[in-house]
Length: 112
Length: 113
Image 1 (spheres, rainbow over the protein chains, first blue to last red):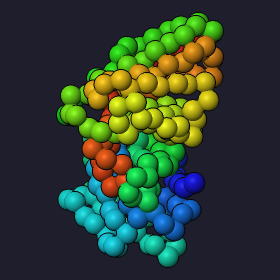
Image 2 (cartoon, rainbow over the protein chains, first blue to last red):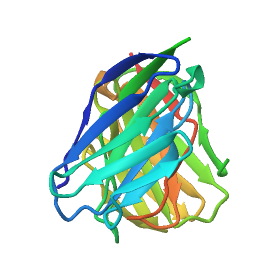
Image 3 (cartoon, each protein chain N blue to C red):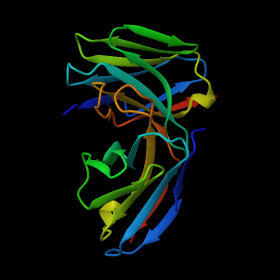
Image 4 (spheres, helix red, strand yellow):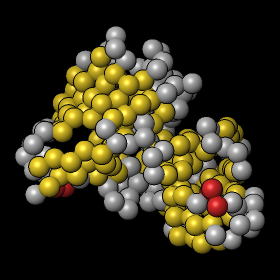
């Protein structure tokens, strides 16, 4: 089955800095890559996703990039704010009837 | 927010006792999932359902069973709870699998003493 590795496990930045979280996947057939944000005491929530026919996708301060050849994808957050502090999960799926596989999560801490 | 509720939200039980967690949705989504979240392990899929009475195992299904007799309800049962099953359990729903967004419930914190 699919295996998703996520790094780093913890990321500490100063407010206004950029943050980058990286994930690698094992199955070249995977073609859908969502990112979820989990705030303290809540369930994860989708913040952005990308399909394999696209190399990059942006939504305001967040962006996701995908390198199919290297089988890795990344989440970029610019101009970080304290409210960006949360646990972020990447996931990979082969679409269709396949269930996404999640990475182990990154705890992002943004210091004011 | 998607209409997903989990009950109970917190539970403390003793080793060897049976425990049932309930997930209820009002979105009429076809797929429902149970995950457990543990430090250092992220979200791991226990079981999922793709329709009434249609279920399948995830990567950590040992010691758990599920049932779905109605579209809106998905039950997770620990037949004989063990301390290794102390965790936070999340239910999720989606219209379909693959490319569809998963909506997560608020979670149930289970402690097995």
